[in-house]
Length: 332
Ligand code: AQP
View 1 (cartoon, rainbow, N blue to C red):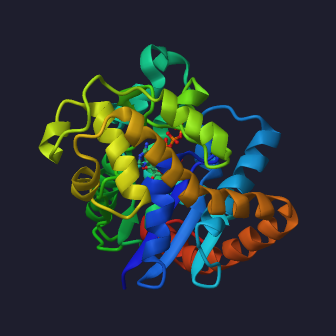
View 2 (cartoon, protein in one colour):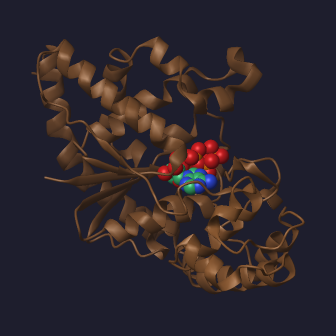
View 3 (cartoon, protein in one colour):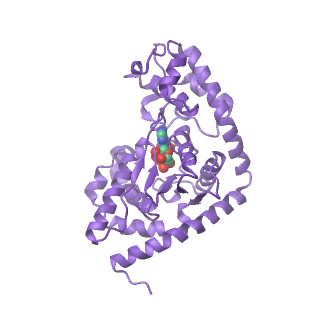
């Protein structure tokens, strides 16, 4: 049976790329298939997090899912560390995955930079824990932004090697589900880098909790170029900042970039940026308002996460048990 799994790290406040590339699409898949969504707190601590901030961020990500329309009676929503099977299967996969595979992961290279000797071992092993997150539920579909594609492909390699090494077909080969104008939302100050929670400057990103004035200011100051918008989408080639702003408009308004260009082709930035800011505020304000309302009642968020974790364990524990059997570990 088709089953969806995806997650978001509580490594800071939610940003627009998380919403457009992930949460908005997660909500769209709800009802069509069985859907399991996670706040991946074990992944967040691959880079040190202030404990209070981690707890707050976990609730913020949960509130973001709920405010965007995730219904806990239709989807399972929980935080990863409440289901110990993630860490247990992650260890087994650490013993299946190869160092050479991890060495090829571009996210690790980006995040470690020149400092690779001094980052956590967890950051290096991140993709094998992510494979465990997905395969613990025998998920078949993983909606992610473009930046996570390589990790989902590695999940297939880990499943295939496990199946081969233990002469089984226990783990399915998972498909990444990527697409649409929001697959890779870029940084507002540099159209060649992705928007991210932990980017240096707050002006680079739209946070889901930014107020209307801040959103307008950030789009006004967003890097663009001296040309007006082109008359057709081919004209966006080699204009990364222009393409990004058109993509954001399209994704927020459920349009294609072609439709946005049909409306705004030839317009200058003085016209397009305010239109983008107004539209973004109109779409995001109801979500951020609801996020704030939910976050005023942390006990209720914790209750939803706890119930979700209990449902997740019901699926995960038999799969972990069977994995231990296959590997030859005694359970008595
Ligand atoms: N810029 C983006 N465009 C489209 N999708 C994006 N995602 C993240 N940034 C963009 C998608 O959001 C989901 C959750 O990502 P994550 O929190 O697990 O990790 P990340 O990709 O590393 O996100 P950040 O915001 O960049 O966090 P930091 O700065 O802490 O590393 C994923 O599906 C991701 O593709």
